[in-house]
Length: 342
Image (cartoon, rainbow, N blue to C red; front, side, top):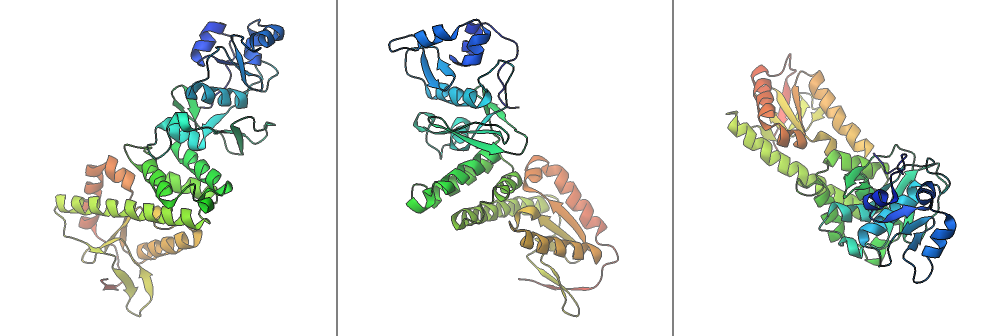
């Protein structure tokens, strides 16, 4: 979903109510309002006002923060020529996070700039406080207060990218505390509710992990996520009546060849558990190293169970049953391994 100018002309009153009194020139023209009348109404002391190119506010009083958001969205979603010449657009970045209600971000009235995401082929310039960001990917959006807003993960990535481009980290305008708070709130159940893997994928896609401050904050976030998942998983092991597994044990062959370091391991059953394995590392080299260890364990007969923190939270009992079943079945044709506890 992205915002698109309505194809079927509703009455001007209904449209104004839907869009909080913010309309475009093409919408007015489609409803029989001539350009001359629009110009007269927007003169000094008139009942209307021009907010952005081809975008008008049908009231005398100053626009509210929500109306400024509508103006930005409508400016980016229309081409100014015809009612049916519409394009998708979604609000992203810091403005989107403010709309989501992130407590770590300034409240909506304090957000001046509005970043809007549009398809790459659009010929559109920044205007006023509206900054245009283009994407080759298909637009995705969530409806927040009736506005089309980018998903949390994309909005966070665009906000951090904007801070990076503006040099906000170097000037101290954005400190490590704010960066960490935004990331934590993005994945919190009572915050953005974003899946950590989805957030990480967006940050990798935006090539933001080359920034040392961002990388450090992400590493801290992922470590906290995995630690929390570990604690919940060990509670589940106890609830299932299973013996306590080894944590962080190193597996090698008798000749000393390194195999892997699984998150949890039952040597008596040759069963390993990998928790949020996709979150253990953020570079492709590290990810390949982890995947290699997992493949070696499976090749040598170790039964490997993969558990994600999101699924652990949503399907706790089901995950517990899978752990119990895996322990009962154990590994198959397991090569003798040397287990070193850390």
